[in-house]
Image (cartoon, rainbow, N blue to C red):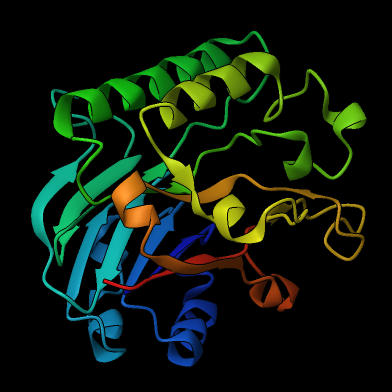
Length: 257
């Protein structure tokens, strides 16, 4: 099974990029974030025509939004955390595909250090850990993927001294993310690539992509049993070099399941 995650930063703006990428890479499952799209504008038919007969979407106008495209049946669908209000920001979609429990998330940005939105980000990551504690067993086949909006280690930042105490790399954010990871997750990119320094996001300013000044904030994490079956995991930077791209690159993992 090949699973990809991609913050597409506007599904209708990058639809051709996504369809072309899927045609070349042939993933079984694609998890998308930051769709910025309401239900009536989500291109279900085009994804089905592209070979994904099973499509689930949880979106809103102008912001947020998550989706799962699959070649295999989607079962036991979950949208947002249990108990969340119907009008809560659309940041989580989960399901079971071929025996794998998959949770696709778009974590809050945080906006500004010490702001209400920053505190909301930390609280949201805490709620994500609670969700896994309540809903899953670490011995099951579980995947958490998406844009978590935090770079966890110095290897995940192009210049740690510059990013120290800044949004996406502050100590409170890193501790909150580590708390989620301590549920039992294995970072598949690190498992496969050891200490390679690669990024999944680059700003659209100052030629940051061309200079490779980025952050690794997009992940595919797996429970230990599923991580053992992971045969490869990589970041595909090619779409980031396209005209008018998303500021994120896809992350892909392959499993022998």
